[in-house]
Length: 320
Image 1 (cartoon, rainbow, N blue to C red):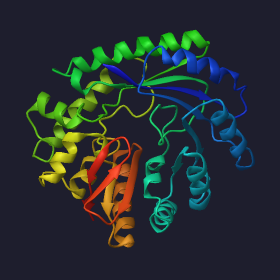
Image 2: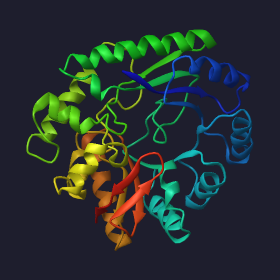
Image 3: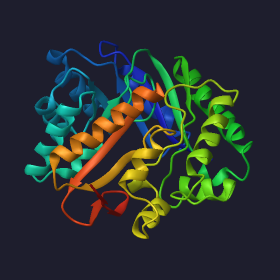
């Protein structure tokens, strides 16, 4: 088990000297990323807040949410590479069109469409909003799963580390987001097949994902955020292979959203008709409403059959 991310959650009006202490303490856990999430500042204060954090050396910042329109989100993302949330399908499609027409599709990774309500105080950017001060933590643990009981073992280790970091800087430990997410060959798709004998795309996939979600829900640790299986296409090499060999397609990723938080995440999609994309997103909104839990969406609108995503390499595009 490795630490995927450690996040400091703060109010936009807080004294930011705490950030310096956090950055030093977080390094001791050797996480893949160290992050700061700020409660959404008023529009007049947002730029100043972002600059203060950038000046302190924070690379992963989440600060812009909900009440910003597509053009405003584009401004902050293109200028500062910060993470942002949009909650309206129409505004999200407008944002993607801006990136597509300006040749900046790579910025899609910074913005999530969140459907079905908000998620609070999770370390998973960008689909989370900070409402209180504290520390949250996420884990990378697909390779640690040889049986279903290993879920709780991994989350308990993560909780111990998160509580330790929180105690060092003197803030509350908000919880561990137990979501099962991949990183390269540390694959959620492989974990599903190892535990249940089911390749994603085959019958039984929904059941297997739901069983993993149950194990996360039942783990006796302090949890925060999403706590579900995640299937970000670009981040999972086995998912890429399954798409290339035809086992997975856009319809199946949308379908899996019924049992996991981002069934359509970090996914290049070949855009031939923007209206069709909007309809697909409304399908996802309907799934979120029926499911009664929020879902997150990140799409790279592309023309090619494959798209290179920095940090994760060539990724096959799904056909709309």
